[in-house]
Every structure is written in structure tokens, then in C-alpha cells.
Length: 153
Image (cartoon, rainbow, N blue to C red; front, side, top):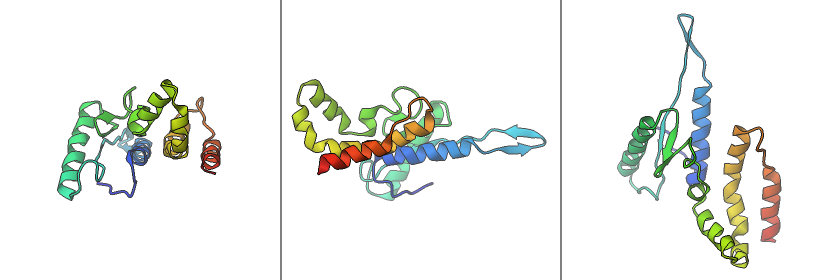
């Protein structure tokens, strides 16, 4: 069990992915053979999934088993798992992103502008994870932070 001060779903996803990758990279040898090690994680978020420890442990345990059922070496948070198209769906990582995209699609960018700094800051951990996972898709996170700061001023 890991208890983290991660404050939202995105921070929890980033932490879970770091743990998953760290365990996956372990090298264990026994009798001259390499033994692969992986980890599956179930994530429960307070207060979204409950306020008391027993409820949170129950939710995390349920999600742990879901992650194992869906192929192991992954994590499960809310009703989505890591790996696969739905696992890191942007609207699930940044809950307000779905609403923001709807505003843009309907030509209401002016209504979104006051919220852009917050949305951009919420995306930073996700973009850092993208940078860790992909050499081709490098994002200048510093520039994103700078844009968010400029929009606040």
C-alpha cells in the first residue's frame, strides 16, 4: 500500500506509472535465470472514492483486481486502466478538459480563457509523463508553464 499526498487523479496516475516502470526495470536473477517483475496497482482517491480508510482500501483493492484481470503490469484508477487508448484519455486525466474542449468546439473560447492557466497547470504532470514515455513526442513543459503564467498576469 502506498499513501500519497498526490492531490488529484493526474498526480496519482503519474506516481503510479513511475512505480510501475521502476518495478518493471528491476533485474532479479535466480539460478542464472532472469525473473521478470511487474506490479499492478489499484488507485483510490480521497474524497472522490470515499473519506474513510476502509472504503478507500476497498475501492483500491477492487481496482487492483481489475488491473490484474486486464493484463497485469498496469494500474487502474476510476473506471479506466493504464495502457490502451482509453487508459490515459485526456478528459479522464484532466476532468475539466472535456468541458474545455466542448467550449472550443462551440466557438466559446472567450469563456474558456480565464480557466486556461489552471487547465495548463493540470496538464503539466501528464505532459511530463508523455516526455518520459516517448522520444518522438517531446513537449516543452517549461514553455507550457510560461504560457500559463503569462495568461494569469
